[in-house]
Amino acid sequence: MLTHLIAIIRSLRFVAHLCKGLAIALIFPYLQLSARRKILQKWSRQLLNIFNVSINFQNNGSQEDSFQGLIITNHISWMDVFVLNAIVPMRFVAKSDVRCWPVIGWLCERAQTFFIERGSARSAARVNVQLVELLKRGESLAVFPEGTTTDGSSVAHFHSSLIQPAIDAGANVFPMAIRYHDKLGVHSKVPAYIDDVSFGASLWTILTTRELHVQLVPTAALDAKGAERRQLTQQTQQNISVMLNSLHVSSVPG
Image 1 (spheres, rainbow, N blue to C red):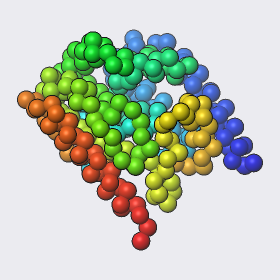
Image 2 (image 1 turned 90 degrees about the vertical axis):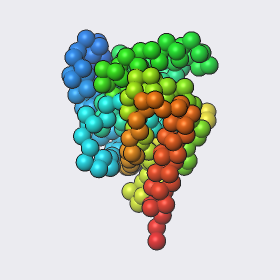
Image 3 (image 1 turned 45 degrees about the vertical axis):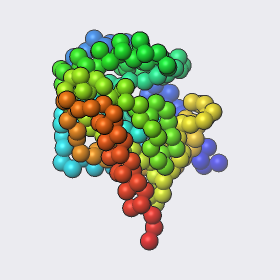
Image 4 (image 1 turned 180 degrees about the vertical axis):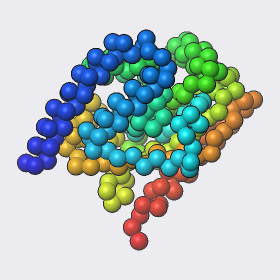
């Protein structure tokens, strides 16, 4: 009973926060980059606070502006976007399906997310040209090379085409591992947006979870200038996989 009451209160706060986001989205694309970054970060942090999600960002002393380049992470949930934006505000590349999500899709579009049509080489090429230009300007961009979500227990195959813009722009690549867990450090599948789970069902599961923790851990940055695409992709995947495995092992009691 208490769990459902908490979920209802969170739901009301979530709707109010969503309405606030819709109002901001009307002017968001016309704001300066610095203002957009601050808004994204603040709104994302407030959203995670509503869900009672705490972030452990092991940045090793790095500042936000140290991550100018292509940020690459494993992909578990729609919540990954807000976790990343709460730390380093950025623009994302997402599947075109996201654009069709009620409300959230429109918000993502207004937040200047890049949408790629599934299986369309022409769509990917068009987006890549835009990404190269932004990377050359020093912006922070993020992609999920797995092309799908997992339950977070391991890292799936990376698609190398999504890393090509970093090579073309001569930018840095920042592999990061994301891991969700409960208060005891045990790996949690609560946020996993996989299989036939609907967005509504996923949202309700998160709303009814008392608390949730997420680790966001950068690995060593990689220089993409002159790199061979497949080799760079494999190195990125390996770095994230090793880090994720390490986080799982370190959380095992005893």
